[in-house]
Image (cartoon, rainbow, N blue to C red; front, side, top):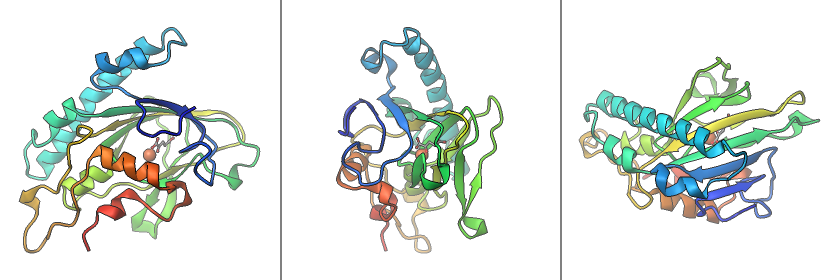
Length: 243
Ligand SMILES: O=C(O)CCC(=O)C(=O)O
Ligand SMILES: [Fe+2]
């Protein structure tokens, strides 16, 4: 069990076990994954096929993350290579979330409302439980249907920053149920640990002044380690906004 958010391999039950005030109905395993050869030997040895199977999944989903980032920067008029090479060399964190059945699911959450710090998150869910906040419907929670074999893609905080607010990061949470264990696998794609994400200068002008400060993945980890985000009153993106 580790509450040090800077560790490259962590498992635990809450966001920061024993530190955060509110505990959530989740166990997780979280580890770095890119470049695979640098990290795979730190991953769990059991079950014996874990490294092989998760390694194959991580590499494929990393390629998809690079491709999607290219398509998104192209849609912003920045060209497909604006950050995709940096994403290719950058951080990939894989989190496997396990939400056991909960006798009183209405009294807790699997994960509290949050947006991901990443540029992009690619999520595989085994059964429904992910909810997103629908800003076009007064901020109400909408359950994301589970389509077998499909992947879900979230815009993260760093893409909101890069686009100077044209793309919005998605606020989401995980709910639990009393019937069966739910598993999800999230792959977070970002720049290198110390590389700052800044709004693209091409998207900053008189009508759209720079709306966010630059920040790195390490800045996010420092924020996470200093704050209890499960209480719902503080989020990383808000600390980056320039009023
Ligand atoms: O389990 C889910 O559907 C959401 C997981 C998630 O939001 C996360 O790991 O950041
Ligand atoms: Fe998330």
